[in-house]
Length: 338
Image (cartoon, rainbow, N blue to C red):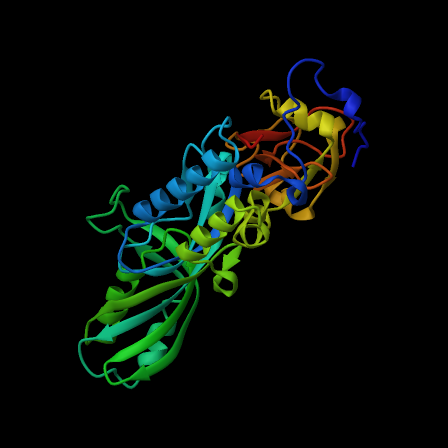
């Protein structure tokens, strides 16, 4: 990629530098205002209520540690879970809420109990396997989205165990898949009927259930931080950049990042490196000034995350030009994260 100057001499002469400290060097207030918690949602409260508890707990600690600074101004989670559903609910804090769309780019994984309305047929596993494909779904009546027929991809659908009139399923699927509706449709296909019993989300790219943290973990960590011990907090609340690891990355010079902070796109002289997965290839390649959606480019390029060389998140966007060119726009902005 084209080299670019990365000197701090490029910083704006007036006002505060918009670039954050590197992820591992942030103060507790800075971490809380741009962080992510891989939260283990309990059964009972809604996702909205859990998010409100996280916001209020963090704001209380910010008020104690940095009374002159701003509150979080809110949190955002990775996709609504019904009150009875438990599991992986990554929750973004403060300015990191701007990147909530990243959870739509990956896959989700669930473990569900399928409650059959009769004995499972002899070909039960074969019938279930047929749903490991692109399927049609219409959102339920209580859904907040438009109830139009749409497709979702089920990448993996494994029968882990079958006993009496229950089956334990592991489902890895595209974001926006309704598991309750999937269970209903599986029941119809078996000929005996079925509904979803207990449901637990075990992964939301790039997070999974190996390092989940409870609400109590968060509250304890915040209390310890207020007393001067932030070790636990730094395990529970992670830099928001950890929510971007599943996206292709573009590394940009600090001078280019400062321009992005004012709303400018990323131009070729400011690009230092680009992941191969970020650049459309073949029929999806962007030609010259073609923009996704134009006649010259039918497919939308993948969402990418731009970082400074020290790992600080700069923006989300899409590749619209040649990163190796001497000039021209390379990344169109979708969200500025500074």
